[in-house]
Structures are given as structure tokens and as C-alpha cells.
Image 1 (tube, rainbow, N blue to C red):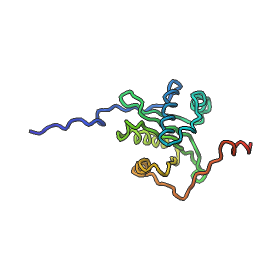
Image 2: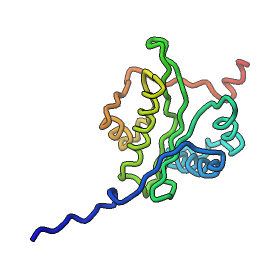
Image 3: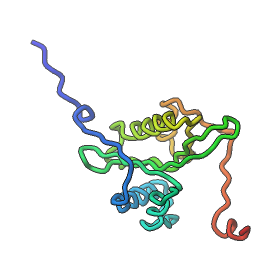
Image 4: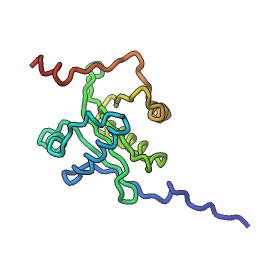
Amino acid sequence: MGRDNPPTLASIMTMTIRPATPADLELIMDFIRALAAYEQLADEVEATEARLRSAFFSPKPAAECVLAFVDDQPAGFAVFFQNFSTFLAKPGIYLEDLFVRPEQRGRGIGKALLLHLAKLANERGCGRMEWAVLDWNQPAIDFYESLGARRLKEWNICRLAGVDLARHA
């Protein structure tokens, strides 16, 4: 007599991905702090709910945020904005942050968030989607490459910020 396979945890969870709303600002701040701690950059967080409200929900938003929930519990988020490729003459999506709570990892949440953004990029007529990953974050590198992402090792990120940016004002 055969036995039915019991459902796996992943098969019985209910995942929802939706755009953030102003009511989610406290949750977004929690995700930002958790991401910063994971990246060992907690002392660099200057974001506030007021700044995020302006960035995400003003008439001309600088960025967008989507939230992932598993069984109605916050599990992860992605923050992204539109960029532009002059070579393609098309917009793109730049993924600024992707984070899944440690206890929720390995359940397909990060993949679902990334694929949600890829679908959005296609719907918006984007030519590509890009992001950066810390060179020490091998689990993230492996994850991105498993989805077909190509690391552009010949490109280096340059940044002008803080005092150095202000002195050129």
C-alpha cells in the first residue's frame, strides 16, 4: 500500500508580494536595519520613516518598495528604482536592496521577490535589471548566478557621497 507524501513546509505556506504603503514605513525601517546589520553596516543607516515617506510616496517617488509576506507575516522586501541605458535607449530597474529575514531563508522568498521585479521590468519595457552584491556574500552571489544573472567583474562601482559630494555643490 503506497503512502502519500506529506506536504512540505514550502508547499503549504502562503506567500504574498505587494507594493509597500505608507502604513508599512515602520516595517520597512525594520527591514533596513536588519539588512544593515547583516551587511555589517548598521552604523551607516541614516534613513528615517519621514525620509522614506518622501522617497517612496511623494508625487514623484525616487524609489519603490515591495514587501513579501509568508502566512501574513513579514518575510522580506525589495527596494528598487528606474535607471536608464543609453546603449539600449530603454529604462531599467536597479535593485537597491533585497532582504529576506534569516529565519525565512531557503523558502523561495528571495527568488519570488527577484522574479516579481523581473516581471515588472518586462511589463515596463525595461531593457535590463541590475544590482550590486558584496564580494564576500557568496550565498547571494550563488543565488543570483543560479537565476542566470551575470556578474560584471570588469565594472567597479564608484561613489561620491557625504562631504566629498557636498564640496562640489
